[in-house]
Length: 460
Image (cartoon, rainbow, N blue to C red; front, side):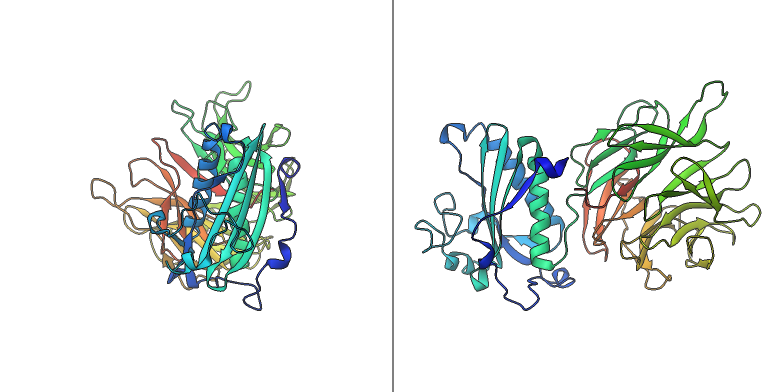
């Protein structure tokens, strides 16, 4: 549907101008941005529509500009040059360079202030449609890297901005950004004592409540195509005396909601198989919790873990290649284990700390993030899939000086970031960190609590 309403049109005649300054076409090498960010000039967007509508549509341009600025700042590859340092009046110079454009800008004006990249963009609004015209230049070579025009409903302005940000990263690094992804999370923002499931953009905008059980809804998970969400809710069924932790499946396209696992006890911790046809989850059935594989209609395919007696096997997470990671206390304390999709090849990969939980695979299957408790608080750690090379991503204090807890990690679709929750402000808010822990940013900024966020793939 979004593909139909959002047209991405390459400006005619610009493709031959794309610079191949390097043989592989890459301007920013992955990993190098940690030590040296690219100085980037991004002047305010020019309005190219009717002057009489400029003030009315100013908010659209500001929203697009701010969204792009935030996206590229979060990417950790760019450092924006303060507009006060600009040598040209960008409101009076064109989006393309002179002498080709009579009132075009001069590359010398931007190289003089040390700019590596220059982004010039303009927009117009006609009726209910916004058009964004963009040019991204590599200043040292006076070369156009990316020229694109984007069109869509005014309501899709933020999505257009995210799309452009993804395209910039793709053009400069060879890898697409995560800015068209979304997050599903459990939160108390619906009010009362309950928790409901919400879906939002990766940056916390456009939050939408998708469950209304007036109960406790937790542990959501995305299907690989981003069209379905599995989650657990304590729903009181007709005739039952108590609420049970049942698993539901929500189809976001149709709005259909199905009760897919309602065995007595725990039905929780959903993780979809790579093909989206099965769900791995923890089921207790009145005994010790074990991990099972289940079809989307609730039919059990197989029991993946089998004790040992009294052991907890919980929080399954399936990699894109079908490998399984989970938490188990079979050796005494809860630790992280990996296994093949059928439960074979079991391997314990963490041995330190008091309590290790919530494993999450990176998209390439090379790393696992998890929450580890050492004293009275949890922190986020990332390690290689075999348990080696462990690093700590988080360490924060609450206002009272006590250490905060950071939990529930989830990788971004490009593998560059880890999202998690932290109670450092007194509320459980969402944060992200680069996978090496060098940069951290707060995503939500309100007075609600969020639990177990899951980052989707980029959604078309």
